[in-house]
Image (cartoon, rainbow, N blue to C red; front, side):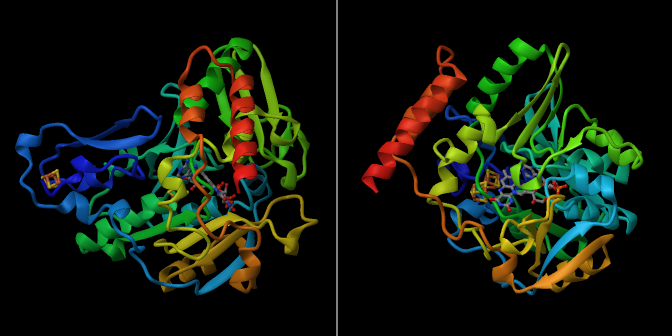
Amino acid sequence: MNNISHIHSCYGCAVCAMACPKKIIDIHLNSNGFYEPYITDESKCVNCGLCLDVCSYTHTETALKEKPKVSYGAWSKEVSVRRVSASGGVGFEIGRYLIEQGYKAIGVKYSLENRRAEHYVAETVEDFIFSMGSKYIQSYTLSGFKGINRKDKFLITGTPCQIDSLRRYICRMKCEEHFILMDFFCHGVPSSHVWHKYVKEQQKVLGLLEFVSWRNKLNGWHDSWAMVLDGSKQQGEVVDWHDFYNMLIKGKKKIVNSRWTQGDAFYNMFLGNNCLGKACYKHCKFKYDCSSADVRIGDMWGNTYATEDKGVTACVAFTERGKKVLMNINCELNEYPFEQVAEGQIKAPITYPLGWSVVIQAAKSSIISMKQLVFISRVVGKINKIIK
Ligand SMILES: Cc1cc2nc3c(=O)[nH]c(=O)nc-3n(C[C@H](O)[C@H](O)[C@H](O)COP(=O)(O)OP(=O)(O)OC[C@H]3O[C@@H](n4cnc5c(N)ncnc54)[C@H](O)[C@@H]3O)c2cc1C
Ligand code: SF4
Ligand code: SF4
């Protein structure tokens, strides 16, 4: 059949499920812990091929062929937004501006109940606050994407692969002018088995989880959402943005700040690169200046702001519409050449590690602890280095 039934270990974006006229495609977590589509009733398939048309994974090139038009180092002019966001808060300011212009904004929030990152539709600026900050796990997209229609205007944020399929979908539906697409420089997404193991261990100590945030410029407890709603509230001691792969997890009994530089197990796994999606290695065609978005955001890690500790977003417009949006947001914008803004970003896909399956199986196993998993991943990393 000319459909997605033969596609496995793809980007898991679920745009095929949105596009299918027969509504017979759904997504689920595969045995490695990544989203994958499947056909619920093959007998209803009319062989139209639409699911493959919109699928980024089955195309070798990106949907948009534009190169960067203009690039900035930027940050929100609102102190609380900058403090709570992953880098400079440009992601939030783009959403705020477009919502005020009558758009609906589809972002990603963390669901404590489902233990997953989920896309959702925000119709007000207050709703969009929950999208602030990076959730370094693969998002379940259908929860938000099913709210897309051809009548309203939308900002959609997501990983570059999710955005590439969406670009194909809106081109195919001939409604591109209703959409602004935003992606980010993307490292990859780890297996959900790693995240679930981490949450399970944290819950044993902290009690049932009530709040999770991946990147914090403040130490100690602070309710990020309340800080943005009430800009005057400033809690916690400020830490350096350059050292803030800093998890903040609040459970019923206790709160923890856990940083990568102090050995946080989740970050060791995520940044160790041995548990990313198969598609994030050899099949990622979205590094550096390859994007199908109107705007790309990221951390401006290079030398330009090496002494800046409040956070700076690297932002790049790939289209005239993206450029227009950036020029209207509530941000301080400083223009630089693209190479300067993208300094420190990965230029080519990460090499698929020998022993990947060993790490994924260990992540899946209930008898292996996070500490043992980190050890296994390190050994796999060392072996790969020696081979290289
Ligand atoms: C999985 C992942 C990998 C990343 N890798 C890199 C990298 O290699 N280099 C780099 O410079 N930056 C990377 N980023 C982006 C970076 O962490 C910041 O999001 C970016 O710097 C923008 O920050 P901000 O303060 O402007 O906006 P923020 O307010 O932090 O905006 C974050 C935006 O990302 C969206 N988002 C959050 N989590 C997810 C998710 N799981 N899936 C899809 N969309 C999500 C939200 O909807 C929001 O619009 C990554 C982000 C993620 C989620
Ligand atoms: S070929 Fe058409 S009907 Fe069949 S699964 Fe794909 S989109 Fe649906
Ligand atoms: S690394 Fe590439 S394939 Fe993986 S989530 Fe990011 S954009 Fe998608």
